[in-house]
Structure formats: C-alpha cells, structure tokens
Length: 174
Image (cartoon, rainbow, N blue to C red; front, side):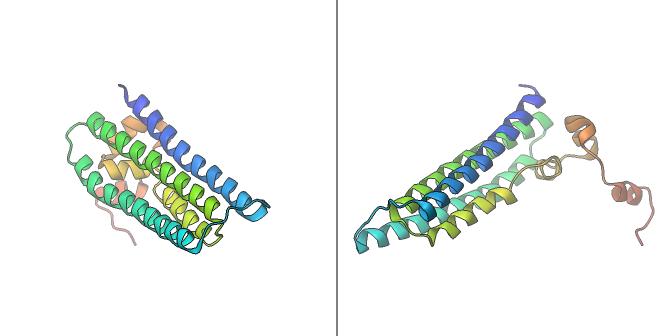
C-alpha cells in the first residue's frame, strides 16, 4: 500500500470514531433529557448497570492510554517509514473503532438506566478521543520522524519549526 492510502485510513478511522462518538452522545443526551419515555429497573439492576458502566468507561480509557503508551515506542523503533506508518495506522484504527464501540455501549446503558449522571462519564470518554486525535505534527512525533521524512510524507502541509532550524545552525534563543 502507498503512504497516501495509510494516511487516508488514519484520517477516516479517526474521523469516524470521533464524529460517530459525538453523534451517538448527542442522541443519547437528547433522549435522556427530552424523551418522555424511560426504562425502569429495580434498584439492584440499576446499581449493577451503574457499576458495569463505570468499569466499561474506566476500562476503555485505560486500554486506550496503555495501548498508546505501549505501542508508540514500538512504532518509533521500526526501521522503515512505511512500516512505521502501517503500524501507526493499525494503532489508530484499533483505538478509534474500539472507543466508538465503548461509547455506543455506554450510551445504550445510559439510555436503559435513564441516569443523567452517566452523561458526564460518557463525555469524559469522548474527550479522550479529542485529546488523541492525530494531526501531522502529532503523527511526526508519535512515529519519530525527522523533518525531512515528515516533509516527504505530508508535503506542503508540513511546516518545520523555524526555531529548531535556527538552533541547529548554532544560534541561541533569547
């Protein structure tokens, strides 16, 4: 596969994961706040669903953060740029599609519980997707690319840091 195909897959997966999560959360918020229809459970079922929701949210965010912490150094150690890009692509796809599934499951549980308190936890999970959203500079750092490699991969979109070039030339920042 070409580099452009991998970059397109990264953009597609991250956008589907993020926008899909936002849409599912928006529908859930509208349902919980505006709908006159609610589901009722016993106190024990409600408590069990609350525990499962909390564990699912914490587990999903932990999985995402630990997976990122583990795989990014492995990606940087690979030799070829295309090999790094391929591994980074699979990392992003797994992370965003997995977290979309977690958000959908949390929203379903929230609607079934009818509990407005869970909305804040769902929004927190969605916020982690915003924080991990890949742009060209984040991808450069995550994959450990040089400025030349990033320029070759991203073309005119990549703008190297002027301060870094000046410092490499021997000048000092004031």
